[in-house]
Image (cartoon, rainbow, N blue to C red; front, side, top):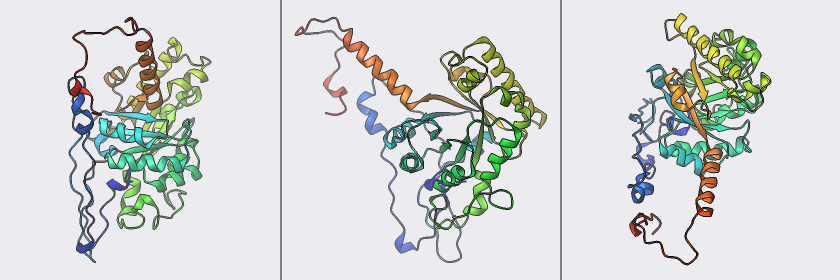
Length: 347
């Protein structure tokens, strides 16, 4: 499935009505005044133009479209993402412009609902960044509403058995392969019905991630990973620690051992299928187990941070620095580290 409207095949507009859509503003406009302190943002993968044939009128590409997350994973890339708990379109847009490979709009623990997710998806589309939606629970009703918005993937929490994984996949498939309700002629996922190729492509493009985050789920992880249609097994260290009796102690030795064992078993499923026939492994970075460590251990999708947590850390540090200032009130500081006027981007 297309991640958002920007990744859908081009609707067939007559030449005289071809929309003129400008690319999103460059993040360099925001960063140029800070060029002395911020590292350059690495470029995202190339964006080939999308072309669609039509028997009724000429096609005109609306925007460049990135490769799908599934195609990038199949190409051997390790993807780095962010969880968006705030439901803030502004923070979603910043995350996309910063260069994250994907953003998970979180409906499980975040305050927002489906209506709040839509502006975030649009902001990510403008930044050409794929979006996943994490559902509040595995259910056909939540999946149906989420899929109609047009994310590039869904993440199902608390999948504890192979049967639960099979049901999750069925929620993403139209009959007879599944139970997804059909309103594809009018929903955003199909460009409101303008995308004639949507049905032929949506199920193959959609990334389905199931979260393994309990002791019973870890015990059945090979069977969960073997379910047809499961693309990513996403480990959940916090809930796993709670399930094992170590609430908010994911760094506990027994929890770490269980997590490492689960990782090895997911990798074994892939290796037993020739290295490409099983699901990819996804994970959350933790204070004791950073994103770099997950990458080195072979994770395919790594979520490095949560937007709310990043702002909290920055805010606490900002207050700490102010309160720890040692200069007397009214005293001039003529040190060499005083910022130059041109470094203030707002002037």
